[in-house]
Amino acid sequence: MLNTRMREVWARGEVAFGSWCAFGNIGVAESIAAVDYDFNCIDTQHGGAGYETSLELLNVIDRGAGTPTVRVPWNEPGIIGKTLDAGANAVIVPMVNTVEQAQAAVSYALYNPRGVRSWGPARADMRQSGYTPEAANEANVLIPMIETTQAMRNLDDILAVDGVDAIYVGPADLSITLGLPPGNNDDEPAFTEALQYIVDRCNNAGVVAGIHSTPALSALRVEQGFRMITVGHDSVLLRAALSTALATSRGDAPATGGATPLY
Image 1: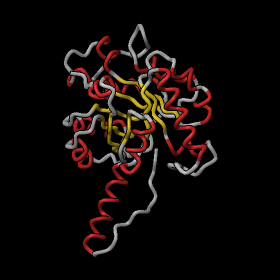
Image 2 (image 1 turned 180 degrees about the vertical axis):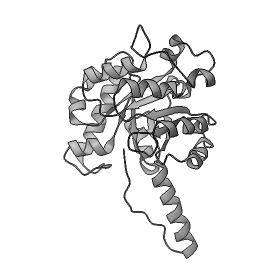
Image 3 (image 1 turned 60 degrees about the horizontal axis):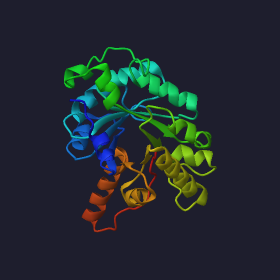
Image 4 (image 1 turned 90 degrees about the vertical axis):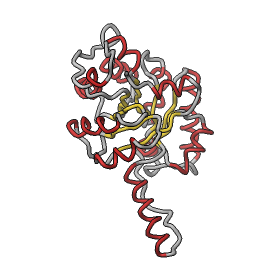
């Protein structure tokens, strides 16, 4: 069946915690699928996977319980449709800054009469029984990214678009447009106020607020009101584990610094 775990978590009023697969590596994806995440996202925007690799990764991600999710490279009908045809049940769309862009993204993800997606679920209907236009429209999740001050100015209109199920904050790009260095800037009022504004507007519209996070920040993000939280990025988590293993073996204190890409 179509994987609706993320929707089910939200329907219970709970927080969906997810993984982020950017390496484009099958072995890493197998490790991710073995963990009980609510969603597992393959990053084809800044990550190493193209379309052919994402097909293989989706085969692996399917072994887990989490909703198969893909961040597409851009807001484009062929890319979004093909990603859903490949078997993704949720799509994260970067740099959605206007209501027109949000409307376009929704239309690309949905079949007639709600959208313009072309029928041809090459892999989706083989792995998901009962795959019909109506079932896909009901089950699949469309998630625009809010990552600029322009998007924040247009947020109420974006949230009002029928078919926007959640939004996803990109902390790095949002920080850049706020005049801050890329990353999490929780010691900066402009950043924390922007996050709270986004959560408040989402709550007002009945739309889930999501964000790219870290294990250390996840509790704070829950407290702030986010209900879709990526708890880590595969390359960052692997580097942290490797550093801790080496430090432990040497009897040193584990390293706590290092660059953390936040997409």
